[in-house]
Image (tube, rainbow, N blue to C red; front, side, top):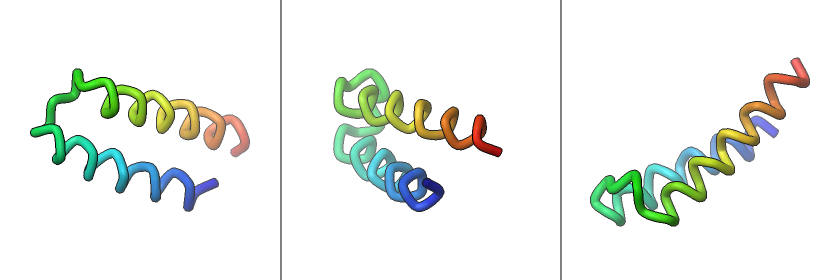
Length: 46
């Protein structure tokens, strides 16, 4: 799960940069929400 989180973080940064760091862009928001869910799942397991 940690690798998934790391990979998703990289994708989020890349996607945000592609959209001029517009954090309201739908793709950026979707990835951010997906990352939030993964992090919460990870934290619940520890």
